[in-house]
Image (cartoon, rainbow, N blue to C red; front, side, top):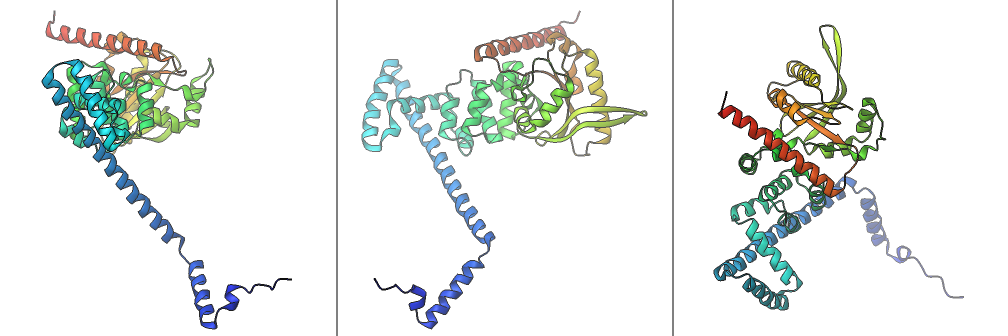
Length: 374
């Protein structure tokens, strides 16, 4: 029978045994908070390094694209551009690897074409990765590209969120997209320079509430209950900055009780946002009801340093001319429809483009009437 092996601690001299016992006791008493703090420091440093690398790559890729673009523009020939990308790619891939394939160089060149201002790239590179830019540069509208780039920066969207926002046609659903192009450009410029969100950037129409799982027939209380059940998803659809305050907010006016469906606070807009839910189409009386609620909130709930409360009337449908004639915007009210089912992408695009065209036509008619009063 083999001899039994003595334990290491048993074979140690008495002094070393004491030291080992003290070390074990120290490890036992080690504060969990210390390890947690050290982990956070390490992870935070890793994140900063990764962000710095991402920022450096964005600036490098823009510079490469700008340099290639300059060479191509000198020749003014499309076929020259294709040849130069192929030739340059062969050289760079051999020396620096697959990050500089012909396709990637084409992306870099497109990047420099769509974002020609280096100051804008410098400002965006701290928040947007190359993956963000690759998704944005192929959008067909420069205003749309600027919108998604700056909203990524301000709301800190990851690439998955950016993809979801583009797929749901967020830009086309903002109140901003219904304005003339010149006004959109001015508002986006202000957003970039002042980091200032406006209601037109925040409010949407329609809101897509497919996550509520509602059946074909439901009451307003069912809609409200479903929203509260899925409050996190609802706030994500509303947009970054909304904080839930109350449901069925009670207001006493002349001895009568009124109840607001949902009350939120928007941190960037620095104001309360009241939401009324309607299972039918928007009616003129809905405006008066919301005005009453907003005036009460302004008098009894708003803090002195806050902006005036605003309201969203979420309804199953609305007439654009009806809304325009009531001039709800002057009362700080946004009327929006909601969809409880996601539409196919092409149908969604068609409906939103029709809505934008209708809104812009009404704005044009109003402007023409103001300039040529009868």
